[in-house]
Length: 476
Image (tube, rainbow, N blue to C red):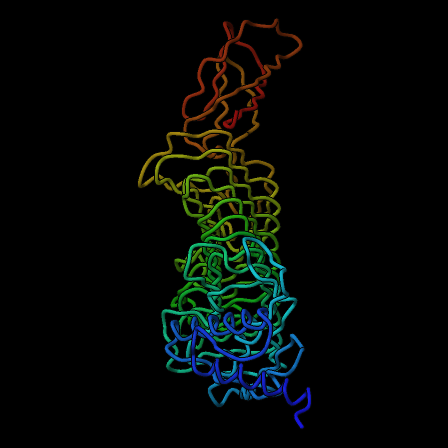
């Protein structure tokens, strides 16, 4: 007599066998239309793995297929090797496949992205070696977390790929609310760490990414990726590394809009953070990657028409900020150590809506300016609403768009020189001055005679003993 339980197990076994055949269509007897739809979707997910990797994941043990839990343990159910000695690629792929094959019926996120109901790929504190990227299925999905262990590239891992890839083959948003948490990603100098492409509301939290040769993290297109509480470095060190002159690669490469990097340390790479999108925010980022004197950059803002980047409360440690043709760039509350400075670079001669204020700079008294201009390619021709002010400077040269000065003399001409303070070489837009004459002297006629070369000259019609006090502004 066949029991109901036996029939159910037989049905599940049939499903597994059908999937192992890599079919895209299924024929069966019994079951609802909903079951039939689920079988077809599972086959579609498996087919996407075959197309990408040329191999399908091995079916899991029966206990995995019969479990109703959305938590998938790589070592317990899928045969992954948590010691990192044997290849665990197929075990991890199968766990990902299973996590994506059980969406909540009729429940979607944006644009039809299936809600996976809080599925988890749990690494259980193990270290897993992989020979090819862990790429999430093209069928997409959301509300899933991969966490709790280490992933390491093998010696033959492809050098142009990333260990974890959220990359849909189409240009549509296929992933939403994906969380990568509590992971150690070791690229083994065989490519990049994590790639997030055309994904929405992705979180990378408490991850340690090392030994990359391209990018520790790549963000391209999509919206609202949050990177927080993480450590990123090509070589594992604490500064003063004898290999520093040879650092290459980029810690975080952002080529998209509306992303946030918060409380992240980038301790070795050629470039700490590369930004080539709009409306991104960096706060609490500590860069002590390759030093500026060795050719490195802490944060690099690429020219994209509209920069719209906010950098707040960051720590640039012997490596500075470079911004190309910035439009709406805000740098505030940050600390620049070891002669680290801000370089504004002209490609098309545009600088507009730039605020550099309330930062601290500390150097070695060798005459390094806190803000510098690179006009070797093209002089700045459009300069508008640029404010550099209220910066706290020690051991470096102050540069500002505002200045105050005074001079006393007995004569008919007074000049206050702002050429060592003002950022732009010949661009005073506003002058306010006061001529204070000695009490025993009658007040003369006076005039503002000249403001060229960032020097302000005031003249009187008769010789008097007086003090000239001047305030100038290049931003108005």
